[in-house]
Amino acid sequence: MIQLRNVEKSYPVGNGRTWVLRQINLDVPAGEFLTIMGPSGSGKTTLLSILGMLDGAWSGEYHFLEHAVHGIKPKQRAELNKRYIGFVFQQYHLLDDLTVAENLDLPLSYRDIKKSERQSMVADVLDRFQIVAKKDLFPSQLSGGQQQLVAVARAVIGRPQVILADEPTGSLHHTHGKMIMDLLQKLNGEGTTIIQVTHNPEWAALGHRIINLFDGWITSS
Image (cartoon, rainbow, N blue to C red; front, side, top):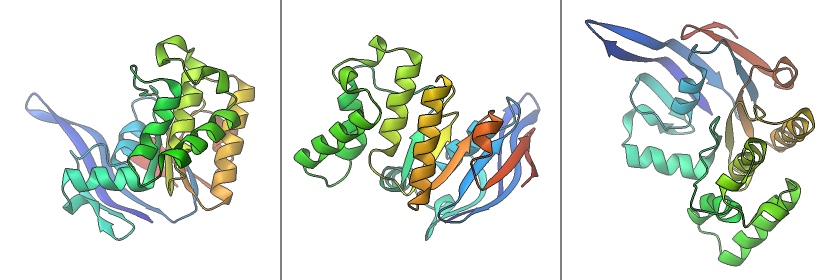
């Protein structure tokens, strides 16, 4: 499903460059549950952003399904993201002027889904994540943990083929964290490809494979 070949990213600094990712070669078959680990600053979030087609400033080759991502225009990348990928951001990225229910409806609105069906899907996810009582609140009225639950719910609501999760349980206590990981495992069992970044060895062990990043290099896989 995903194939990276010699993917690199750097920034100009003075007369030189600071490297964020170096010679990344990675294959992720459909249906895998992959964990990415590494210390802060090792390039984990940057790699997820490239995989999610949110970052186009890199070199190398990226093949996603039958698409050569490195050779298509930004608008086409955005369409692939909307169609195939659910992203759990570390900083939530909820829209402040939309309610919880409206934030959940947003990814569905990009697809050809009837309004009544979208409302049913939103109601189901609100119930599954135990946040029905929060549906009319705005993100600023929620705790960090509640915002994290909504962010995960938004990523999975459209049943994307790939879920990219950047510290999906980072703001949650263990009970809610386990609920999220159980859900990701269930979705993976149904065929969804999962790629998560985590520092938690308990959650990392739930995946099929762990790769480690250090200073932008893959050090093991």
